[in-house]
Amino acid sequence: MRIVVKVGTSTLAHAGGRLNIRRVELMCKVLSDIKNAGHQVILVSSGAIGMGTGKLGLPGRPGDMPGKQAAAAVGQCELMYTYDKLFSQYSHVVAQLLLTAEDIHHSGHSAHVKDCLERLLEWNALPIINENDAVAIDEIGIHTTIGENDSLSAIVARLVDADMLVLLSDIDGLYTADPRKNPDAVLIPRVDAITEDILALAGGTGSSLGSGGMATKLRAAQIVMEAGIDMVITNGEQPDILYDIVDGKAVGTRFMGKD
Ligand code: GLU
Image (cartoon, rainbow, N blue to C red; front, side):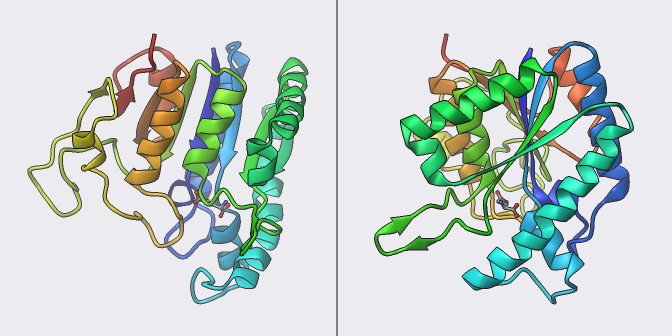
């Protein structure tokens, strides 16, 4: 199987932005094992801005563009340093791809990104992708940001014709209401189409460090389902849940790709 796994800042870091060592170590171990079992894995990892915020000791995620760029420049190094160290323990080679909107929306560019990813997979490396937050900016007439990694991971999954996209989040899946506010909320195990009713279930942004939320996850689902790719949203708290997903067990919410 070719699997794209997207991990959000809320899974990688503690609330203050510092690395959640236990969780990230386990995630890297499980992903290494899944690769050892013969699957191809691409990791789309957030965390640059969040980890930069933590490493620089800033009081919170910067609100201005230069602040975000600078925090990402610091955090991205920390992120890849961490991944390189952890995956090396299991003899896996990591590769970093930092993308902007131009790289994925411009068909000439995206073909080159695809070629690079295909070669990395052929060489059994583990591509780790993030948005190039240090240089991607939005100005009048210039639009180079993607903005969040849920959509980025969906676009990557579509680009490489993955078998599945897994979004590791701080929530178990899509619920009938916001489970943080409503105790009667029930997990929806399977979604066959993104209807108006499903879209209405999405609230705003989830955590203070990341920039995603259910709305961006449903947008990601739309992108991959249209391309015939299944997507699973599940809680990244216990990364070994990835074994169950690879084994085809019912986990979180599964969005069924069109046949
Ligand atoms: N690219 C951002 C970062 O690494 C994260 C975007 C997102 O949270 O989806 O901090």
